[in-house]
Length: 123
Length: 123
DNA sequence: TTGACATATTCCTATATGGGTATATATTGG
DNA sequence: CCAATATATACCCATATAGGAATATGTCAA
Image (cartoon, rainbow over all chains, first blue to last red; front, side, top):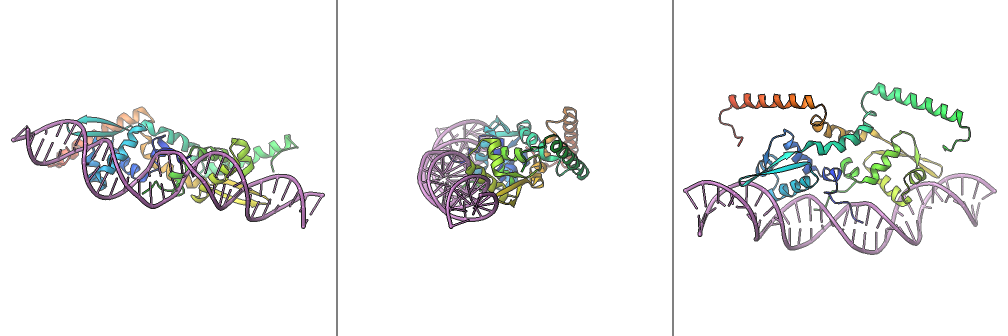
């Protein structure tokens, strides 16, 4: 099997740096014409259009037709899965004190677990 | 050009669901032998080894040799870039009130900017 | 209608992938 | 040394990619 399509989910879509750059342009929440993104980032127009299509397919952006322009807008809630996922690991680098405390707790729990279960499977 | 290698950076590495599953097993911060991960997730051993290699190359996990086992451990700080990136978008879905306030502020800033710069380029 | 502009799509190609399966490489116990 | 166990690697393959160039589609304005 090949790698999952970039349009499979948000995680695959945002793996591409260019697409994150595009999102950075859209982060202000306003509508942006494709040409504006092209100018802002200095990448070729077909590339921008293609990347926007991927972002659109996973729902991270939305489009509105306005005359000959197509206005893209960030749809931030579709990024939430990434946030929810990373949140699980967050505690390890934020709040050094909490981390230490957490580790101490873990050790204590381990000890307790070991005491109450003499034939433990942990190697 | 083809898609960037999975080992290019954390974003590419975590795009693969199986690798996120593996990280979920390692999230407790303890050492885990490959076989334990295999048992926990029920995926074939070569696959787990290969995925662990990718995670290792981007630094998200570290290894220790212990006898015939190789103990993998989460190296959470390497996930921080993902957190830092998503943080920029976080405010949009957390705290509805903040979001409204933020939008109001943005509008005001826009108005101020427009007033002080009559020949603006915004379309 | 025609031309100018904005955007999307098509075609091309080198490349890395993930999953299987099979095998190689440790390391240990006896 | 041998067998058993744990893990990594090699091989095969169908597949989707990102970028570049060229072109198609759509929309406006005169």
